[in-house]
Amino acid sequence: MKCGFLLIFLVGSCHGLSRKHWLKNLNFDNTENWDKNRVPCANDRIIIPNQSESVYVQTNTTLREMVLPVDGEVVLGQNIVINFASDAAVDLECNGEDLTYSRNKIKNWFDPANWKDEDVNVNVETERVPCTIDQVVFPSKSLFHVQLDQSLSIATMKIGTEAYTTKSLASFFDSPSGLKQFERINAASIELTQKTQCDDITGCVCGNDKSVIKDKICGLYECPNIACQSPLRAVGGCCNLCGGMLTMNYYESKFNMELFKQDMYDTYSSAEYIGTRDRKKRDTATNDGVDLYISKVTGDKIQMVLTDKVPGTDNGKNASDKARKIKDDLAKNNRYGVYNIYLQATSAATGKQNQKGDMSAGAVTGVVIAVIIILVIVIILSYMFVKRRPLSRTWFKKDEPLDASLEMAPGIAVVDLSFDNPMYDSPTKENFYMDPSRPFPNLDDDTSFSAGSPIDDDRSHSILSFSNPLPDDLPDRTLKKTAPAEEGGVKAFTNPLPEDLGDLGTPTVMDPIQSPDTKKGMEDETDA
Image (cartoon, rainbow, N blue to C red):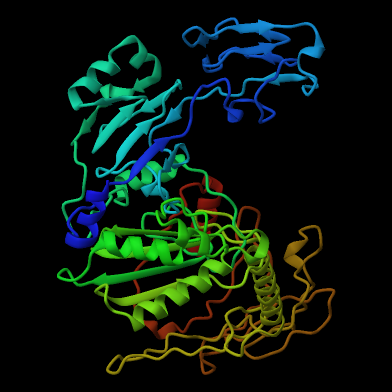
């Protein structure tokens, strides 16, 4: 181990890999597996529901009663004994109540909530899941149920005390114990590269921030609510966060990721940082609850994410302040070979905010008020527009002339085809033809009408009249009342047309329905 540190500080070419521990198990003594978040004691009655996960009892225990499922499973470790006692005096500190086993769902490999880094608190969700450069550990004396639905590659893997290779791990997956603990979808596999260090002095990229794997990881993770304004989203992060974030470029010839991490963690991490190996530095470290995480991300940049555990509306304030201090210190001391340091920090808190891009309650309220105001303005303007109407009309009313004009193209002749309607503006009279029962008006011998003569305005025999369009200089052919013809004859009248119109030919009678008597009468009239 001392050799390793000497290599790190003197040579700078040995970069240890991160070690990720699986957190979830089926153990009887895991408080997360019980509905009351505590381990059962001697006076308790425990209930294991149907269709729940297996229960692994790895230590001797005493219970008052155990209710077993119809289709469940209780696995006892080697030489493990369960005692049942009816005397409450066995454990005076145990009040005794019903506890229900709550583990009823398999856990997915790619869920960030199922992993924890051995040294630091990783606040970038995709990098909590083991990367290709990470070592994976499944703790001893535990039973697991892991869903693996996609093939992957990691550095090393250890289950309990046994380290595996790619080949031996595949054999374990096919064993009874492996089939019980690892549910592989579509024969998913794990490749072990057996690397123990990063070969790049500037650091190795995790790779989980690429879109395909990132979408899978973020789809499994449930983000917590936060309480700051203008939250941040780290590269590779699934959730918004409160705190500070620094991104920077580096000179390849000068930057050393391992040295940079060690100095930043030892100088700026809180006393809770478990990776600090110097006890004196840990004792003098601040107690501001700030978590610091450094990694190399896609795009060949160094990312530093700071969060804190301050509750309530001040969450992220300590982390933001420390991020500003780190930026100032790095700007003054460029011995690490970093440049273009960009700072992002959250502002004062205003209330809880939802995650994955959702707006805060205050923002939602503001949007609702703005929408209401806009709707009111639109309604008022619409009402005023309809009431007043613009000068250039787009509507017209009945009996109202249109204010419109027609413009003809040059060179087009305009021909006036209009005429005066002789019925227009004439006084409306009662038309006697509308009532056939009324007698025809009596016309005396001297009763006549001619062009331009008005008709007496006596409504008893008034008719609609109009001016004769024939010329005024025609001979007087006044229509007069004639004596009735003999029976079978027709009424005669004088032709009002002039006699000098010339020979127009003999008219042809076109009435095929005339009776013989009528035809004979017409011939007699012609002879006469």
